[in-house]
Every structure is written in structure tokens, then in C-alpha cells.
Length: 134
Image (cartoon, rainbow, N blue to C red; front, side, top):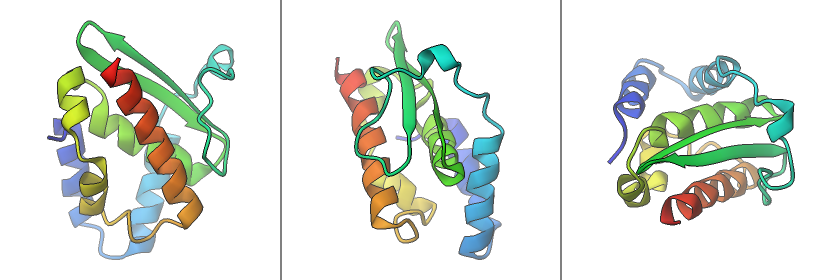
């Protein structure tokens, strides 16, 4: 179950014909995010397993998952923005039920990311699932 914001993103992707347009769109999504405050770029928020530096500030508000993040790589910032659309605002139970790999495949991302980027994406998803699981 994906969020409404992710469903809108899927619709936007359908209008983009080739991977380069989609790649640019993902980067633009990342550029539109507010930067993560420097005080949150600490070892506890750093995601291991990513080729670039990635920080995710994941929190629960009641039964709802919310997170912000930032990377030093433009495409990874875009992937964080995509994950925010997929997960932010979902209940913890719904967040755990998300098949992130299948949802990302709807965008065609699985086939076009390098092995290192795919590993980093998996690491970010695992961090989100870990917090959602408590």
C-alpha cells in the first residue's frame, strides 16, 4: 500500500518517456526538499551501506511514520524524496506492509540504479522498516 503522494509520483513518471527524463525528475525531487539541519547529521542518523553519505532522521508521531533525510549525492537525495513520498504519513503497520521493491519497480528505478545505489536504497528502506517495527 503506497501513500497518495507516491501514487501521484507514479502518475508523473508515466508522462516521462525515457530513463534520463525520469532520472532528472528524481534529482529535481531531491532538490525540492529542505536540507536536513546540521545538528541531525550525526552517527545515529547516518545510514551504513550507502556509497554516498546519507542521513535519515526517522521518527514516529503516535502511530505514524515520518522522516527527513539528506545525502551528499544528488540522485540519492532524489531517492530520499521518493521514499518520503512512499512512507511519510503511513501508519507503522502500513509502512511495514509496503513492498518497497515492487513500488520502486513501478517507477522503473530497480532496473536503472547501479549495484551500489541499489544497496544504499535497500539500507535506507531497512532503516525505515526497523523504526516502524519498533
